[in-house]
Amino acid sequence: MRKEVVVLATVATVAVVAVLVRQYSRKKERQWKQTQRILRKFAKESATPVPKLWEVANALVSDMRASLASQEETGTLSMLVSYATSLPKGNERGLYYGLNLRGTNFLILCARLGGRNEPISDLHRKEISIPPNVLIGTSQELFDYIAVELAKFVSEHPPDDTLDASEKERKLGFTVSYPVDQAAATSGSAIKWKSFSANDTVVETALVSDFNRALEEHGLKFRVFSLVDDTVGNLAGGRYYNNSIVASVTLAMGSNAAYVEPEEAIINTEWGNFNCSNLPLTEFDSSLDAESSNPGSRIFEKLTSAMYLGEIVRRVLLKMAHETALFGDVVPPELATPYQLRSPDMAAMHQDTSEDHDVVGEKLKEIFGITNSTPMVREVVVEVCDIVAERGARLAGAGIVGIIEKLGRIESRKSVVAVEGGLYEHYRVFRNYLHSSVWELLGSDHSDNVVIEHSHGGSGAGAVFLAACQNQESS
Image (cartoon, rainbow, N blue to C red):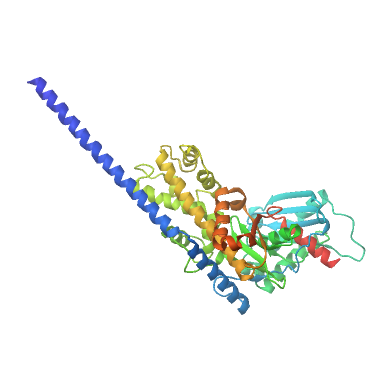
């Protein structure tokens, strides 16, 4: 009898365990199906078929034309006429200096240009961090600090002794990677970032005047002729090597494009602020925008720049973690931290070709503290990265085609576009998606008319080329 009771108890236990296992399996199956539903919905809303891309390109062209016609900011584009009055021709020779001002640091460069078909030599660059007290000081204090560091750099890399007694100074190229605040520039308060468009002559004059005063006070025989966005600097660097370059695009922490109008006017589009009803926005983009420091602004940049791509991926994964327990029953705390996922790490996961996505597993552990991911979960992470990267790259490609369409060069003339930035240079899949989108938009009849190439010189080098062409022009 006792034996029968034990047997019955064992059978009952086994039955209970079996029920629990089935319930757990069904729960995991429901969760997995929900993960796939979120993924499919996100992919559908992020899709960029060719007709959609043409809608975006045409909307961009419309905004460009409207802004140029009104000579003021219309729609979402600024279309700033650059204060750089010329671009290199490729025959510039001599040693030239440039500055690239960034958010918390600046880059000083010098290089010797040898003219057409001659290599660049004597290239020197020094990156200098801006002390916190200078960042919160006045613009004049910042320029004084830069002038002191420039003087040290020039003493280490002295210029050619080519100034005649009649010449007062050499021209210095000056590019800005992150635009400064308009009010700050005119009031003398601290320079702030990411909210300024240099479309005011008063602002331009004030900045240039302040910096030239600092150069003079520190005994430097240099003079800044203009302060331009670094995308214009990239355009200058491209023109030095190739006169066929008609536009430059920056795909780095920011996103922007500059191009040359037929009458040789240099236009900074500030396309990062472009927005239209045709952009494939999702709930994740809306929440990112609403919680950003500039809600409603820089929408195109939030879809196409390195600053935001990893953040969009993180937001998608966080929703899956909450609603489908993708990474276990407890949501990893680090996954809830904004901007925890950087674009280089996103690229490393996306481009992981190992059988079980081992790199993805390592990155999830390193960045979010996730130690128990399965190959199936890692595959989901890769798919999310792919959706975000493909959308961003293809939209950038549509922007490029829009600029070429505005110039009327798609059907009849070859155009070269120089692209600068880590997304293009280091993110192979992103680069391939960008190229393929341009080919698809133009078709076999016209795809050969647009050539996209990596910009020469790297970040900040455009300032040197701008200095070269301005000095040549004045000589």
